[in-house]
Every structure is written in C-alpha cells, then in structure tokens.
Image (tube, rainbow, N blue to C red; front, side):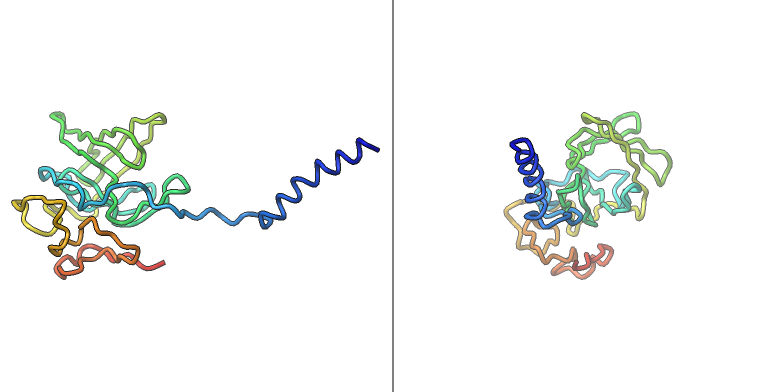
Length: 193
C-alpha cells in the first residue's frame, strides 16, 4: 500500500506543475532589450571603404556600417531572449588591417571578428568566440558619412538635443526616422508591432 501511495504522489507533482503553468507553454517571445549601446553614445571613427547599408544574409536583417561602427536598422531576436533594437551597435571598433581584412568586435556574439571581402558586394564575417560563428554581409547601398551632420563636428555625448536622430535618448515608440531632419529618408521606418 505504501508503495502505491508514493507513486501517486510522485506522479501528482509533475501533473500539478503542468496544470499550474497553464499547460503547454507558448513559443518564446523576446522580452528583454539587449544590453548594447546605441549609436549616439559612441564617437565615430574614420570613414571606411565598407561604410554603407548591409544585409546580414543568414537572418535577413539590415545594419549600417558607418565610421567604425555597425548598428542595427532592423531589430531581431538574439539567443532567444534578447531583442536587438534599431540603432543598437552590433559591430564595434572596426579597423582596416593592412592585408584588406577588417578587425573589430561583434557585440551580440561577444567575440572578436575578422571581416574578409569576398567580392565588391559580400563580406564574410568570422566571430572568434567560444564557438566560432561565420556569417555574411551583402551590400544594399554603399555610402560614407551616413550619419547626419558634418564629419568635422566634434562629438559630444552630452549634446543629445541638437536634432540628431541617432541620439542616445531612445524611446519605446521610436520609429527609427529622423525627428527633425527630413532629408534622411534612406533610413527605413520600423513598423509598430
């Protein structure tokens, strides 16, 4: 008798946990914004030959590479729980090496990267982390000095009220467009979801 009672109790615990959890769980939704800096919080570096709008082929998302930093145009879910938001910096400290390669850091993957141009429109990126990851960038639109304002302007992180759409003051209702600068029409608006 004792053995039957203990088996019933043993089976009751998972059944109770399943019922209290609401049955089968819904698909995971990213609820936490990634802990990444925004483009307005870093000082631009020198213009580079790869400055422009690029598509990450494997996830079909747009990024802008501009003066040593790559930032998201489209948002995406990273590692099932983190949401990369528009204007989050995803590539940092990009520097051209003497042999045509580019070195930098992939912030979501938390790894050093090496970028190797395959042709004029494709770059192979290898992240050298605990688990090496390779992905490809495909050129959408070339450009240099994509951020509004003159490249001679001194960077001042405290100055966020000068009409720069890439300021660090990010809000949840941000559409990704320039608030005061209507000539930045190349930057696609993020649809509300």
